[in-house]
Image (tube, rainbow, N blue to C red; front, side, top):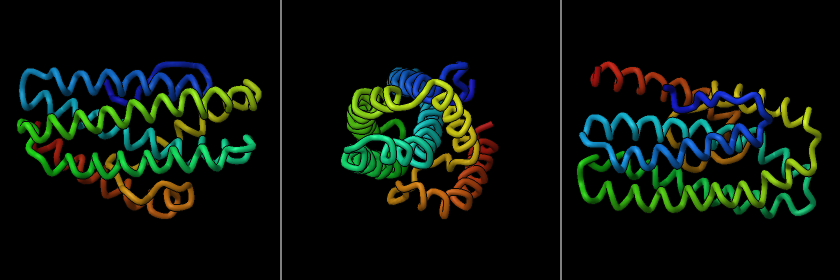
Amino acid sequence: MEATTINTTDDAVAFLIDQHVRIRELFAEVEQAPTAEQREQKFYELRRLLAVHETAEEEIIHPRFRREVDDGAKIIDARLEEENKAKRQLADIEAVDIDSPEFDAKLAALRDGVLAHAEHEEHEEFNRLRAELEPDELQRLRSAVKFAEAMAPTRPHPGVESATANMLVGPFAAMMDRAKDAITKSRTS
């Protein structure tokens, strides 16, 4: 199953929360994978889902929240700081051998930060966005989120957290990431 395939007909908030659930599952699957090959495959899924998920939030959800909610800028600035830290951690962990104790420690730190970030989004951002927008608007946002994810980079790019930066850098980064993914996949197949 592709990591970003979430089968829901709900709105953008439900879709993103479903992805948070899958992210939690993938962290556990990486940690519990019985072989290095399976661990690498699950980590690849996790990395990809984190990258496309955050890009969509940065391009679609966060800007909308800034506009719709009175103190939205303050809340989004905190979320973007968390996202940048996670991207740096994710980029750093990729340089570590997947079977090493260092990988385990870095993965645990990443997991803790990402799951705390997801909780902040769900409670501080998503609930308020749902209260501010009409259900049909949230359903339209889901389509925009899915489109943004389809075009998003599949690897972390620390420092690219704004909608503008994603629009400028994203297409080139996505093309390069997908080429790297294809090469990596052909080596492991």
